[in-house]
Length: 358
Image (cartoon, rainbow, N blue to C red; front, side, top):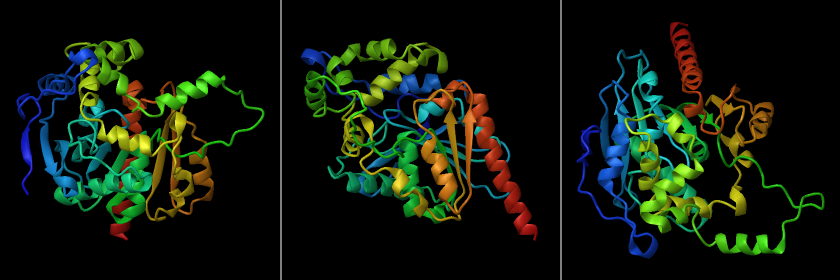
């Protein structure tokens, strides 16, 4: 099947659709506003951007993809694939795209069920839902005719990229995990922990029936204002032509049917612990796949699992800490993040060249 292709700067890729209604039926999402916000966030990228909808087998879905070709191609030409985290999309990598595309092709995809990709229903079983999302990435790779790739994945995307590498190690040149979610075990309850009040248990139980971002869809047109109130820092990290671009982008990619969000919820315990922690499985990844963890020094993500993996894994494991960065480390300190990623890729290329000469 051929992919649907268009310039990302042309906001008329598909016909705008009315979205889910919000409070009292007042709210709706707009594809036109979503595309406009995305285009504005990416307007600082001088490279020619190509946006495409790549067809995959799973429920005849499409994976939205942004591609940049390099200024000068490297000898091995292994592409970089950027995978976003929970409730995000490919445009959050706007500060990485041009920097990483100097010598290599860069693809930023929207995970199935998120961003501008299709919203099929996933299994309610956490193992099957994870596998469905992983195989969607593999189908995407096949359609893109990519033999091998360097994966750079953030948060929930890092969890899925790790799972993908477990299933398809021969397709991964280097696994780069930026503040990955879902690695540690959920700690068992003990008497030393502060016990919540009974009403907190009740509220937590009620909220567990809802998706994490349900409130955004309930608020409808007031959703962007809520995102702005909760995350005023985003306008500093993402400077489009309009300071509200990032809030409109986040709202409109999450105001659509929340199938990816529902799949994420099925994979988690209360308060966001993974039901299937990656720490249990990670060392099953082929030792031939080098792994680099990158953490923000101010992030809420605990890097301890990475140090445990480094101590027990036979294959290459490196851990980098970016000073002053939080969980969105690629947006907090983009130059430092890009420098780390490029140094990893240059090192891989040098080692390949040396082995070829031998």
